[in-house]
Length: 465
Image 1 (cartoon, one colour):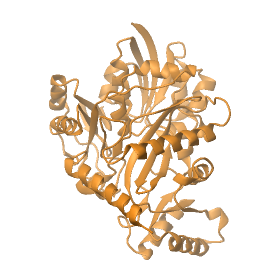
Image 2 (spheres, rainbow, N blue to C red):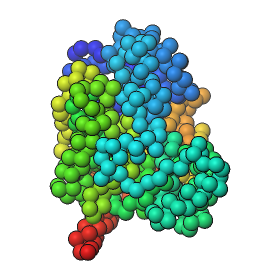
Image 3 (cartoon, helix red, strand yellow):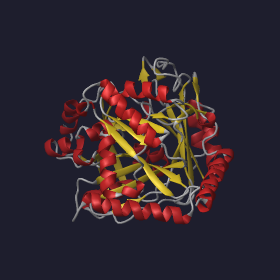
Image 4 (cartoon, rainbow, N blue to C red):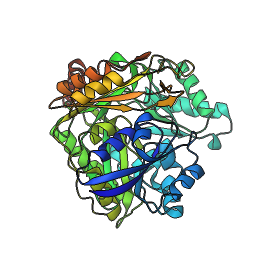
């Protein structure tokens, strides 16, 4: 098998799933050069060269990468900070390493306001009603408050988003994070104290995550996925970075019709063409779209766009990818990515987190010991159906300890969602530590609730005057 050097810049999110997917190649023998924020035991064990860079400073990443320019064929990352900061631009210019992500020009997740303006140009029908409130355009706080009050009169149930990325945790939603105009105003002022704010109309529906891969010329769509952003079962609790996710056997989700899926593909492809412009643009390489979609009774809206894969949802896709990931990366670089194949299997990701995760920012805990031994034993017995991926964990003083975020992603793969869910829970129950997880990721009750909700929305639309 041909040896291929792969640079991985990791924030200990989905990098272990990326590494595992490369290792399952039947054509290539990957060698990993990994720069990450902490000593993730999974990556340390599999890396040819490993470097801990706690703050992931770009100049330190560059110094590490430059040592292996001749050995590395391409590089990937698992977080938005690298992309938004122009990591690809810098590494390609200074180290000559092709990176599988967009250039800084296309890193639209750096600004929620920029996203809304982009969607106005490329797919206005998918853009919810919104208003950008900018401190640079107001005489003072009261002027901004007046603008906010005018906005929520138009939108009735607002969603408040800081302009800068907040990984979901900084977003406020009417009915969940505030229930009165006064509470909404307090939430707005807190966000406004840090800069520009986008106020959007809340869209009722069912959410999905949409991923698109591109080589700068062609666009290839992945199966839809669904993530669970709230901390507790039943979608209760605070917004988090995600507690788990799933994909179904088909390209759609159980609550999406063929016609609705076709509409998504049509709108997204047309938007890509407008975004790219005439001719190929290699700046649009990698997972160029990770869109949060809200499906309503009459079409869909794009809630936000990220220019990298979802950190639980991309694991659903990686674990069911039928193409060799190394070949996919080479085709992106060569401009020959004309399609992607995924197995007709369901995938369910359940995340294990510290007990305080999602309770409040101040109550996050880290440093507790965690053991994956029993979970990995179950994986070894069901290797085609279970994957155990350490995330925010590290080796410290001879022990494996967890951080304050998602510690482990446990994946179940099956011929249907229920089988995949059972496999996921079978392994997740064997992760040991002062931890917790959601029990309802892809549960029959949750799926039925989503299906019933979508049917009610379609019926209401059909009967409205």
